[in-house]
Image (cartoon, rainbow, N blue to C red; front, side, top):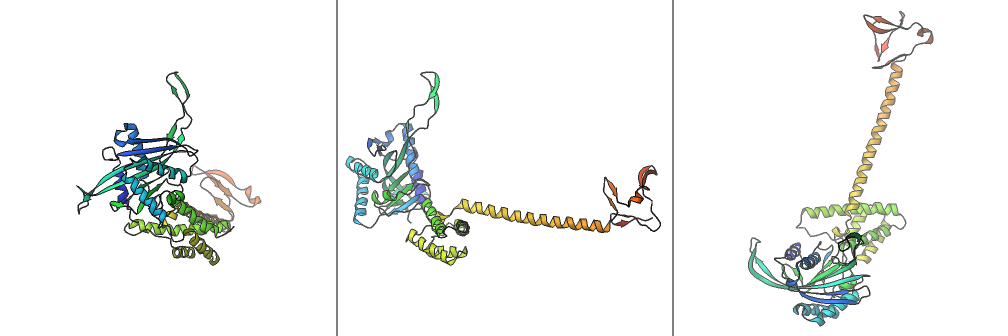
Length: 419
């Protein structure tokens, strides 16, 4: 991969009022019937301020996310059709969006391949960036090192605003607001040529997909002419299906094995996060076989996982980060910790119960007829002796008087009393 996190950040930092250099922006509004309702072209610097910042926000969103997750570096496929798409995109860029026929070709191709049930807006921006050179210290200098000319395209859903009440000033009352069609943030988009190693890479495209959405493989292959890639969300789901499906109907064992594999993957990712110089871990077929073995998965199931994994991912093994379900690992760790605490509590309760039972037996053996407490005193004596027990005052204090014969002894709390 040639695009770095620094490249993405550098491009995004420029999308501010005083630093943005977009010169032209074109758009095409498409309804749910795949019909073009509106086409427009504007000089970006001449937009009204509110519109300027809204369009700038859309462009900035198209250069956001995480590389290899929802921000993908695409390579052109090696065939004649892909060569034609690349040549077309370069021609469109060089036209600076002034050629309506070239723009129409892009709109038509997007409409043909983009699968969306509602209305949407296609936006295309043109920009030229004088890439400043950097001193050995890393600080940017005024001199330009390279001219980076590129296109930014964003495809944004357009939906009706939610129903709401509002104040109708002309009628001086509260009533239902008119519902407008609102342009949302992009569902997908791309930058071509890609900005890689602080320069132009005409052999790759930086492709954006909204987090959690599918990658739209048909758009990648047929609009851009590139080799399709999965997003992190698609990698995660595909990997889970490979493992879970291999167990058949044994859902409980499948979930346990999947959690064990996820816990190991989490440790692998954490190790890389501590040292950013290390490359991301790719889950090759061999790595997945090791994960399955460590999770103590039966051999027959391991073989099925290996076959399904090879069929699903082929020569494009996902990064470990992409298939990691952090929430599952955290929830599993909490469950394990809770179960361990419950086990300890159960053991302590059992020990306390045993200790209490032993203490009761001890008291019964050692104190057969007198038991006492700090508040109540209870005596156990034969019935014929009970009539001889009375209360009285001894040295000014209330006392319980128990007659004792010469051959008898008194024991309180296990200790003999002197008589």
